[in-house]
Amino acid sequence: MTSLNIMINILGNPTLLIAAKTLVIIIGSMLMGIWLSYLYYARYKNQLAGISRQLEQEYNKSQRLREELQEQKDENTARVYQMDELKSKLATLSREIQTWQEQVRTSENESHKLKEQSDHLRIVNESLHQRLRVIEEELRQAVAKTGRSTAKQPVVAATRANYEQVSQVLGRTVAENDLTIILGLGPKTSILLQEKGIDTWEKLAGVPVEDLQQWLQEAGGVYKTINPTHWPRQAKMAALGEWRKLRIYQEKIRNDMT
Image (cartoon, rainbow, N blue to C red; front, side, top):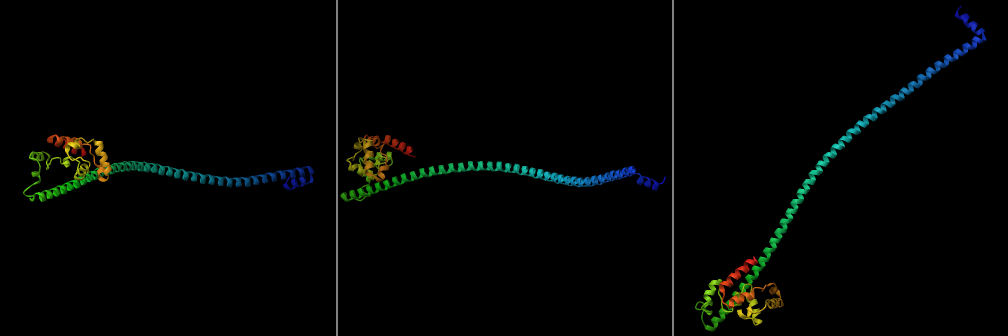
């Protein structure tokens, strides 16, 4: 039986015709399913390829982020080291500044002490100059009264004979009841005491220190800075003729003042 005869038989038989149609439909559906599956597979394959590319890109980004993070960590570590070095330098500078401040304070204290010593020496110098002027004036008055020149009658000649040795002991000319031999008591202060009736060593030895301080305070000015604490004791030594003892005591006072 040829294929043509088979086709004729099928077309002539309704049952076979239905079966043939059904078979054609099934085969067509299978082919359509295969073709659609291929289409879906191709689409999903493209999507999968796209997802793979995205994953690769994300992975690359992640790698770059890891590298950047590591760089940031390295930079932070370097900054920490730099900060530690700066802290160490700052501590060193702080110690140096503190040392300089201490040196400045020491220099200021020394400068203050030198200024006080300078002021003291200036006052002593002024006192000595005033005393020298007083002695010169007394000498001129003595020469005017006696009609003699200073070459014929030195100042020491006006004192008692035993005061020549006293002058050698104290290292200066000493006249009886000369209040200026008292250390710290100058010519102007001597005049101030004489105005109070204190014109001898014995009288000065009997004056309480409190009275002397009050008189100096009342006089004001530079007198307020004078310390009369040692005057009565020195005057007592002079009144008793304890010259060597007076010299030693005055040296002690000078040492205490320096």
